[in-house]
Length: 249
Image: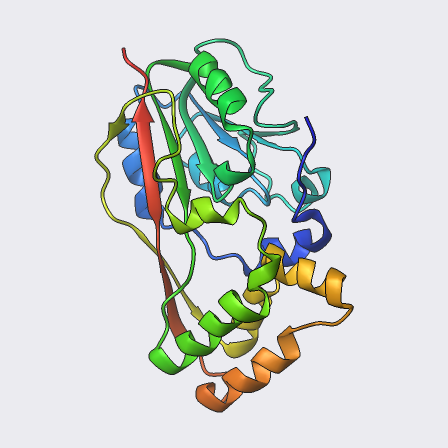
């Protein structure tokens, strides 16, 4: 199958500017797993989720189809990074207590992924997929960023983006969903950190390629009028959209 790589060209920026997932999420997932022997993180990117899992599981296997993304991954002694697609997992049957997919399920061939998920999860094992879409800051800034999202780069979002907008609702997974708590991502960012994050969007990259110019300076100028001192940090949050399924024991 072909691999839709929307991120390798900005892999360093992705590692630098993407917000961290909350520790409470991984604490909760660890309590749901039947044991803490092995976790598998698919489409790991720069290893954000893998590093958190490594503090809670004996072994972590973290895979990504992009070798460039893996070059940016944070190393830990109990993380085994592998360059491979999520639809072809190089692990044995029933070998994983937990499988995670952070902000990436919409790029997968979901039926093939589901078959592999069914194979590698042990009985009672859980799989967690999550995503986040637009952030919340304050009304004037949110309005500018919303126009950038929907109007400036809006035409350049890949069609798979619709799954983020619905929180993967309606996307068929192979096992029953379980109830989940609510989690938020949150950071304190200055203006240029926010601009760096906007630059990691796949639609921003596609805009640059199609138009031959960068849309970020103009949106930065608009935001600066609302922000004031660009070095001042502000609280930015994203509601996490989480689905967790459990394989029958």
